[in-house]
Length: 132
Image 1 (tube, rainbow, N blue to C red):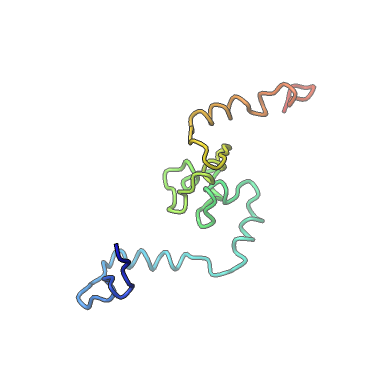
Image 2 (tube, rainbow, N blue to C red):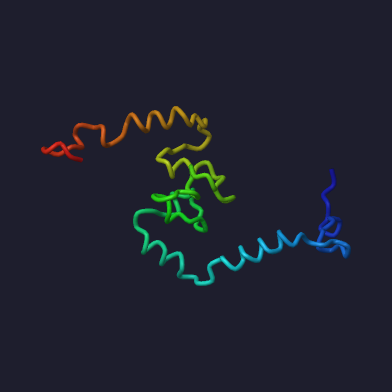
């Protein structure tokens, strides 16, 4: 199959009859306005929020990963994941599961194993007063 050259693609923006959806245009403008303008913003967020990190949102630095211990909406298991949260490896790491290259994604087995091998369940992790 021959490859298409860029000039052979039809782009809606090149069509003089194309009218963009105002709702989508507004959404895009709002997203652009929310985008960080300050290059030090991420560093500040990391310094101010030591209980969480972008790893909790599957590595998505744009998500509201600071809320992982509160609402957790944009965390890996949250009800509002962001499009960047599709990296299986990063999502697994966020919930304490790791995968090797070419390893089968036996997710439930991995979680069960993780939960059976928790540090808190090891008797050696407790102090003399039976605290962790």
